[in-house]
Structures are given as C-alpha cells and as structure tokens.
Image (cartoon, rainbow, N blue to C red):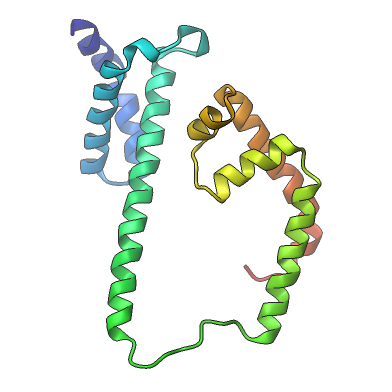
Amino acid sequence: MAALGTLYDETSRLVFGLCSRILNDSADAEEITLEVYAQAWRQAARYDPSRGEPVSWLLTLAHSRSIDRLRSRATTRKREQALEGAREVSEFVSLEPDPEAASQLSQRARFIRQAMTALSSEQREVLELAYFEGLTHVEIAARIRQPLGTAKSRIRLGLNKLRESLAPLSEGWSM
C-alpha cells in the first residue's frame, strides 16, 4: 500500500493534469484520477515493464477513462436533447436531404470508399475500429493484439494516406 502512495505522490499531478485537459471539468478529473489509481492497484500484476514506464501506463489508463467519460457525457447529452426536441416538434419534418445534397453525399461516400480501399488492410482495420466502433487507441491495440505504438502508427499512416487521397476532392466540399 505504501508503494501505491509513493506512486500517487510522484505521478498524480500528471494524471490529474491530463484528465483535466481532456475533460475540462475538475470534479470529473478528480474522480477519474482516483479511478485510475484504484485500477492500477487492482491490476498491478498486468503492468509490463518492458512496454513502458509506470507513468506511461497510468497516463494511458487516465486517457482511456477520460475519453470514456467524454463519450458518456455526449451520449447523455444527445439523449436529453433528443427528448427535448421531440417534445418541441409539433409537425413532422423530412430528414431526407434534398436531391442535390443526396447526390453530393453519395459522391463523397464513393470517393471515401475508394480512398479506403487504397489503404493497407491493417490501416483500414484500425481506422474502422476508431471511427466506426469509436474505440480508443488503447482499445484498438488490444483488439488487434499489437503494441499501442503499432496501432497508433497504423492510424497515423492511414489518416495521412486518406488526407492525401482526398485533399484534391475536399476543396469544393462544405463539411
């Protein structure tokens, strides 16, 4: 238990700082910081010194938990807004885009699919996990059973290739 106290004393400012920066809410940051150290205590046997320093592991836990909290907030906010909007709507409004907008969306989707097929299967997989399943880098690394650095590199390289492929086409698109 003394070891956890020492670890906390030496690293809590960094962990809290990261949580605060991500969450922009000191109460949530404090809560997540405590959860990170509780998780570190429970899962101390999982820590692998060959994969990085203890502070890196703690910061990874803090980042993941902070992102989870942000997602939770966003989901709650969307639910609340949907309920408020449903109460305020007095007549049905078509949610279908007009034909011109539908055509533009279809064209964008085709270009994006073409650009995605130009990626390596590894890059495509991590980008799909990140953007379609909403996984964090840590979760992606676990899912593909590769080190975190490998997952991040694949994401970065894939995004760079997509950016290059889609750059000439995106100038006329309003996003």
